[in-house]
Length: 436
Image (tube, rainbow, N blue to C red; front, side, top):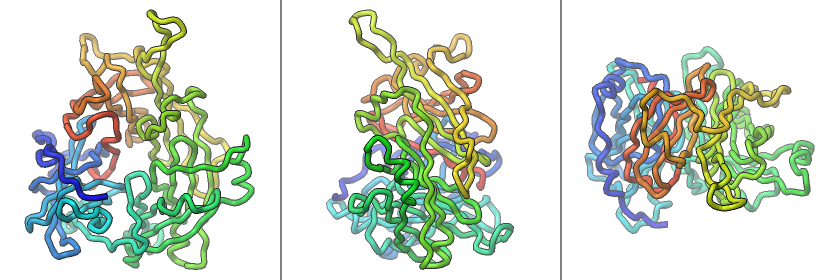
């Protein structure tokens, strides 16, 4: 694939408010933010700005622009030395104070794979001794190309629990070789910041566990949607197929000993709201309808589907009438699947029944085009953020926050991007704002 050029709106990031400026300066601590996956290419400088050089010696800077949810935060990338940034930089993963960024620097028409590098941005308290930093990572020796659905970050302490030193591991699935592997076997790419090297390892589910999953004569299938850090002494990372289940993998023992084979465990996702899922049948991105995250000491999971009612105009036909959603959780147990399994938290069977402030006639409440449920990272709350649009083909829309437990619409904010035409994944949640 070749570099095609920037979208014109990628040069014009949204304006920040006075409240946003307070978050940048660290005067208001936001426990988490919603962060746009596509960065802007603009010369924005604030207390979060960090810079480094590209592989050919040109300077590149990264700036974080946090905004209180449901407003969407974003990243700005700029090259004072005129490095050719002709594709939108991408946020691939986040954990704590870290962001993994993918940046392609080359002229239009050049190959993307040959000109793409990965960077780690680390947040730092404004004015403190440890300010923000940006580091260029070595390219994977296997030539793997990572996306937001197949790589994640895990922070760990090399000196053990309670030590002051902090390192990180990047854990990714080798998608290019996935189809050549037998059922239940995976190729993993791991980058350890302590060693500064990538390594590729093979891992497989145990035969007994694999046979239990191959019920009904179906072959085992895992198409990764998201990677989340679970943690623990073994450094557990979860590779999530949001249509099917979770593969838990212990990565730290592999970094310490080349002869160690990664330990894998599998947990199925909860039963769906409706047995027949039309979105899945269409081959849609599951992240538009499901999300998963570690919040506190539990793994939380949300599923949404369209709510259908019988048409008043056509016999035996059904039309979309709002949406329904359900949240589950289970202990973030890193040693073995928890015996109690998934526990149901909240359920909304028809969004038309949500409580709203009297007199609120926002367009965001009457449209049926809801998608992309994103879990709040606040502990002890059941708040979900949704993207909504008038039409699936619209570029702009709203982000709406809903308390599923109280069945109440909390807040909304316009999402004017002009870069996300149609229904697609636009942002993720991140705790990086709490480190500013």
